[in-house]
Length: 167
Image 1 (tube, rainbow, N blue to C red):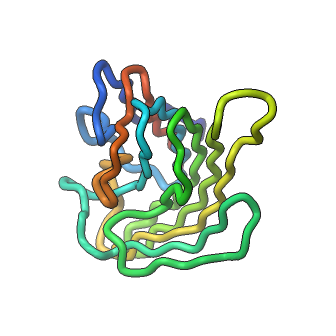
Image 2 (cartoon, helix red, strand yellow):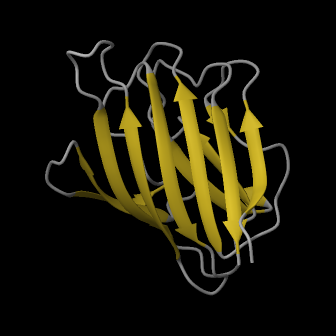
């Protein structure tokens, strides 16, 4: 079975959330690509999953490291795969999430943030493993949001979230 684009959303104005306009057909293997152009303040991004509605309950947990540092964990969150540094320019994220209805949804993500402009400043990186503890059904909606830990920045015009999937 080939990979297919399940959903995409490109912002036409700034927002704290990027979410496709409608639900998509659930697939077992999912790749999520996100490019955030920041409006200028700190913007921390989380994924939230759902079936019919986005789950904003404390049903997510994660293990992560920033810039190669030691592992940290967060449990009972209302979103997963957070950027844990101040990122006020742009970031690019690649995530993989398994989506089997009777199993917790496990995911891995890698994110790079531009940090301060110029070749004299190295980019930031984040590595995360996380899970959504839902074992009732597959997700068919997903968003990336700053609403978990609202900061001064937002995702600006032309920021994009794309979801690919296959069985």
